[in-house]
Image 1: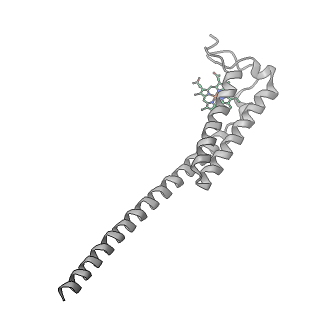
Image 2 (image 1 turned 180 degrees about the horizontal axis):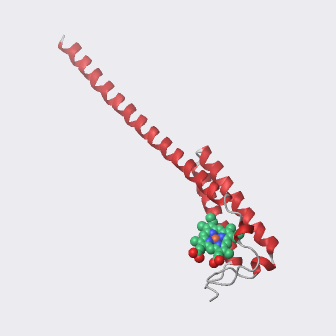
Length: 132
Ligand code: HEC
């Protein structure tokens, strides 16, 4: 009788521990899925922010008078400048896609690629110091 009771108590204890673990797991799963959704939303926002900028209209010819770091190469090598802007769009689109897929490793790679797309244009077309 006592043995049976003990076995029953042990069984409930074990199932309590197991279900607590299941709850903890459900928590962490929900948490990480929310985090991933946040990633995707943020990447989507970056993509939208990037795509909303039309670099050609932001850099009209002659917009070098004043406090600017824009180098003359922007207009001298306008094809390269347009290419750099296009690269940025592409990188942002790929980041958004990676975040949507929930692939953390890919997100890391695409975040870096996005940063590189910013940096490579700056290196070519943005001066270290203001012209004035
Ligand atoms: C197609 C080229 C190009 C790309 C791509 C680009 N930038 Fe720039 N960025 C410029 C140029 C040119 C300037 C200098 C503008 C000026 O001073 O008139 C600039 C200036 C800036 C500045 C300084 C603004 C200020 O107050 O003077 C920041 C910050 C910046 N970029 C961030 C970014 C980030 C972040 C990205 C990537 C998501 C990016 N840029 C991608 C060309 C680019």
